[in-house]
Image (cartoon, rainbow, N blue to C red; front, side, top):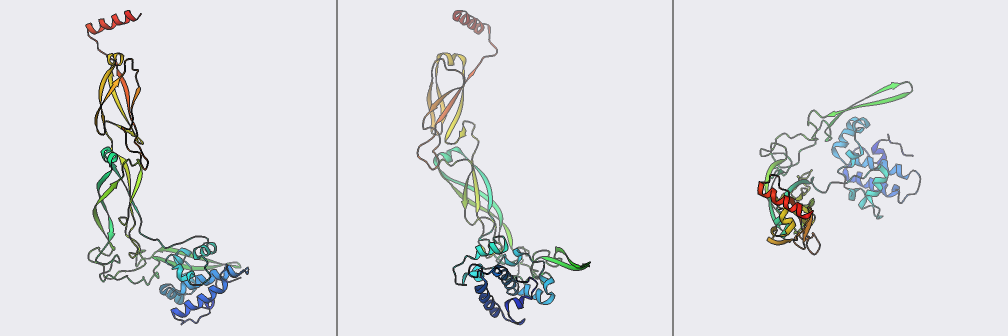
Amino acid sequence: MATQDRDYYEVLGVPHDADKDTIKKAYHQLAMKWHPDRNKSPEAEEHFKEIAKAYAILKDPSKRARYDAHGMEGVAHFTHDDLFRDFDFSDLFGDIGFGFGGGDIFHRTFGRRTTRPAHGQDLRISIEVPLSVINSGGSQNIKVSHPVTCSACHGHGTRTGRPPEPCTECGGTGRKVVARGEQRGESHVQFQQITVCPICHGRGSKIEEPCETCGGYGQIDKEENLKVLIPAGIDDGTVLRIHGHGLPGKPPELRPGDLHVVVFARSDSRFQRRGADLWHAEVIDVIDAVLGIALKVPTLSGNAKVKVPPGTQPDTILRLHDKGLPRYRQSGRGDLNIRIQVRIPENLNDKERALYEALRKSRK
């Protein structure tokens, strides 16, 4: 069983003054020997884990410097995510030569997958689009204000435009670790207090001469005027993606994220939308419900004539086929549904009351 507290130089079998190429070569030889998919001995996985951790420490100049200066206590606060966040897995596994998956063995060995982000974070906004645009398809202009990478410093925040040096106080981690040990009976207990680095304030680097354009932040706010293409019949809540208009990448060499535009139909006093169908309410008088009437009702392409048959009851639905919206990503159109509501007169004059009384007597 491999011992976790072994000296990392001893783990890789290299001298303390070994250069980067020597360390990498030693790592590759040991990784080939102890890769669990090749070596079926019970201790292979523990050896492989120890080798990978030693290499992660010694290949990084700032981590190696802390290890050389403070030993195990200097790097004890590093989590697996700290060690392997920016690890190039093609460097770690890709050229071993067995065709084994680096991510899979890493997941089995360290209990999680950690992959380098491919781009900056995505942004999400919602817009409302008129039914006329949804009916025919078209474009919608939007304004979006969000941070972008500062072009003057290329996102590094420095006046020179080059990446800042890692903070010497925290070794680039952004955290300050104070470790102490106590002897309690036969056990030795190790305590750690982790705080934000007071020198770099958690950034992991200290910028001596900040960029004049962004003040050292590496980003500036920018308002963009974008055109969103709206497909005909698009459903409420559909998300349209605009590549490269999200937040800047971190580190700045990564491409920006994407902008997700969630589309909803704008409220229209004439219609209610239910998928591809439209609903419209028409209020008629009692006499028109009894005798029937011809109405003009609005549609998305102008007015249409609708015949209300005699004896129409309240909440009757009259349907105009294919007068709704296009069916999104399907053929055909929805319907326009007209709900008939009957207005009951409240204040009758004497003549109207007499007529209703006569009508009631005749029906009896």
